[in-house]
Structures are given as C-alpha cells and as structure tokens.
Image (cartoon, rainbow, N blue to C red):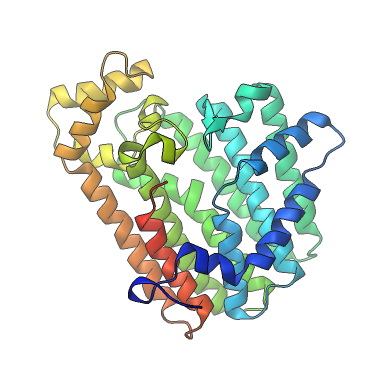
Length: 332
C-alpha cells in the first residue's frame, strides 16, 4: 500500500485493504435487513442507502487482518456491530427528536416514533441472531455487555438532559458507554475472529477504546465548527437537544454568571430563539472550550497510536495507526 503524508495511509488506501470484505458486509446488511414486515425493510434500506462511515466494521476487519485472516466469521461480526450501531442511531433520533440523519430525514420523521422504536428493536435482535451463528459464548458476552453499557449511557444522558451541571468526568463516562465501548468491542471481535490470544485481544480493545473516545470528542467539536452541508445535520444541535458536551463543559469552568445564563437559556428552551448559536460559539471559543476539547481528543488518539505501534509492522498495522489521524482531522 502506498502511503501518504508522513507515512500515513489515506482513507481510500485503508479501504482498499479490505474493500472486498466491506463489499461482503454491505451485501450481508442488505440481505439481513429484509423482513416480513414492510416498514422494517423500508427503514433498513433507508438507513443503509444513506451511506455512513462504516468505521466499526472497518475497525473489526482491519484488526482481524492484523492478526490473521478476515474470514466468514469476521464478515458476519462486522455486520453485527454495524447493525447494533444502526439500531442505536434509530433509537437516539427518537429520543432526541432529531429531524435529519446523514443529510436526510431521520426514520422517526418518515415513519414516526412508534414504528422507528420497534424497527430499532428488530435491528438489535437481528444482530444477536447473526452473532448466535458464531456459537461462541465469549462473542455473546462481549456483545451483551456493550449493548447494556450503551443503554445505560442513553439513560444517564436522559437524566442529565437540560442540566448545566455536567462535569468532565460525567461526560467522559457517557462517551465511554455510548461510543468508545462499541469501538473496543469491534476491535476485540476482529481479533477473536482471527484467533488472537487474550493479550492481543485486550490490547486491540484498548487501542480502539481510545480511538472511540477521540472520535466522539471530535464530534463534539464539529457540532460547533463544521459546515452544516458537510456535517449532514445542523450545527449546534447537541445543545439544542439539551446535551452539554465537552467544549461547553470546559468553557463554563471559567465563565461569568451571564455567560452561564446564555447556555442555560438554550438548554431550557431547546432552541436558539432567545440566544443565537453565534453567541454560544463565541463563548466556547473565547473560553478555550473548543481548543481544550480538541486537545483532549488528540491525547486519546495519541494513546491509541502508541498501543498499535507495539504490534508488528504491516499494512494493516499502518492502516490502524493512520485511523488515529483521520479521526482527528476529519471534517464530518
């Protein structure tokens, strides 16, 4: 594989390493998304035709290749983690009252909340149905544990919704549950599918956990700084939905009472009617919240990079190292 800047692989170069396997995962997702109930099939098609980064399947396939071979087990498990991720997105959009997903109407807008919740449940069960074909209790234990963590994370977020009293520790715990845990499980499943030892599986899980933490913190920053057309959803949507994320958590640490009142107003109103988004963005920038959140993301990415550099050099090891840069430098 030809490498780009400073020996890093580009996104296209990374995908080229596993493009055949990713194509099989896409076919698997479409095949398994067919249901006897038309609404479920329609929602599944809507979600998968909208694209997406497929970062979790990519992570699973690359770690499988790093250890050995991405065979049929890896293909199935890559589909499983994407199904679980997709189910969480469907439920999240219902809970958040989101209007768009990847630049298109979200399922809850097109089909309503009731149908979307049930479709999300169906996707979860389909994921576990596929995972059962592995006949591997370790795989099932991992998937059950990560699903429980994600549900717990969603419940914790609901409890804190609209609150301005959210600490850095609170928020990082939430990111662990809602995002990083599934990244870690994806890498561990890739290692398991290739017959990795316990230590290799654990270390790859740690690498991916740090990558997932970095990924979500960059998402937090992009919610303030991205171009809406590139991001695929309105900027400032987190605060509008009642969620206090790391850039504002940092900014509020040294904020004046009137600055805190601006944020509290948006959290209460669930809109920028009284306080324009520009005022909140200026607060996050002037108080160093955006800069500090990006720096924290870079720390997690560097931790992931150090771990993966301990593995023998190969195109897959370089690809996994390069992912840490791509996560940090992305624009959406």
